[in-house]
Image 1 (tube, rainbow, N blue to C red):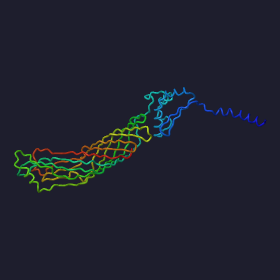
Image 2 (image 1 turned 180 degrees about the horizontal axis):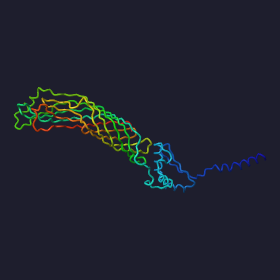
Image 3 (image 1 turned 30 degrees about the vertical axis):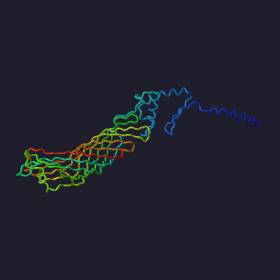
Length: 342
């Protein structure tokens, strides 16, 4: 009898405690994200789930993820008005927006680009010249040559100004200084054709060929290296996709540079009598640079429309054709490769 009384007393004491530990939530809503993530909403009644429709949950998740990526906590990246609107459940995303805080500098960056110059062939027509002081026959010839691909490396150091930030997207203006180390080869420079410009010429094609048959062609194979310091400026746009590790970026900018190359400037690459074709790097250069990247995969392309030039010259004033203009041919340089750094 005593045992039965003790059991009844314990049951009475424990029953309220067990009742107090029962959850007050009567219904749940589960949303699976990916393979290993789940968001659970708890409600006292199914009718409470209708309130969720008043909230912009996509913006909330994007904002929380951006805070995590940038090491932010709380609501320090939202202004007070936007935070109050978010708590009130205002749905319009144009009202709740991230604060850019005006123009501000980002962290310093250092990037290196490794790639190749792009080879090409060229054809140059020379300035007219006289056959000799006694023979006033005016001659002109063309030369052919090749630029062969070799390595190129860029180093850039700079900073960027944050122009605009909206959720997972950022617009920046990047400014940097650096230097390009380009290498290429000039090969197989040879005469293409020779013709007379004099009306009623007495020289046949065979005689023209015979005039220069004893002059050896200059078959050049010259490796060239140049340092190109530059100033670079251009817009930079990046955005994140839904995968945490996925970040796209694209940029397009301009470059202003010069060339430091003391071993190959105004060097004759072909000579025929007193006529010659000179190779030079252009002094002041401008160019375009662009890149496309995803996470750690980056491709870049640089283009210099007047990287170097070919000039025709007649050394002897007595053999120069009066009034004949100088002929200059500008050659562009393409560099493509992959970029390391951000």
